[in-house]
Image 1 (cartoon, rainbow, N blue to C red):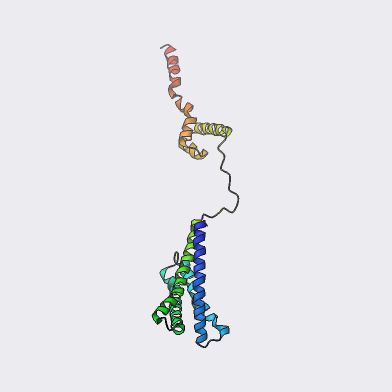
Image 2: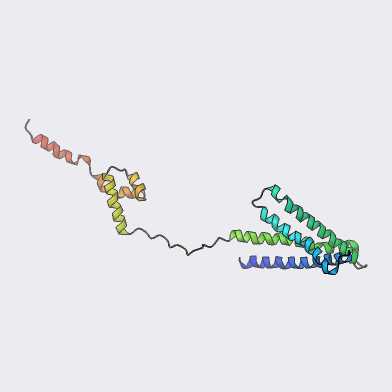
Length: 214
């Protein structure tokens, strides 16, 4: 992870933590005002805002590979959690707002933290997932050394084998496949053999026939 991406991820985590804290305190106070004991009031905002985080991670994790029908439930949870959190924060702002502040303004301000929490969680998951996909995996073991080029002695052995295979009647292409070399290499090795004319003995035979009396 590069420094730019690390800074972006750190910033999104800090913003998400701040948005979660603001929404948490508002929802906890609303839970206490609604009759939930102070010892249990902290659980209500944890459930409401926690489902936003979990559902966002589930949606992003399932999106690349899952079918659309497989993601409808995480999307439903995400939309429901966001709607409840925004509505509850706005309701708390109306109940606890200062009289000098209009209710609409108080509700709009209180709705910002849950919306930011939803957006920033989605962004954080996207950042971490895309960085992991772009980073090539490191090999488990030591990097293998590059294969050494064939030695000169090995080339001589291959040439001798190629000549023997050619004498056995194998074609150049078949010899190249057998030795794992290019057909042009085999042709270069066997050039002296191919260049020997089959009629080299013909003049001798002809001269021998002509020397015999008719």
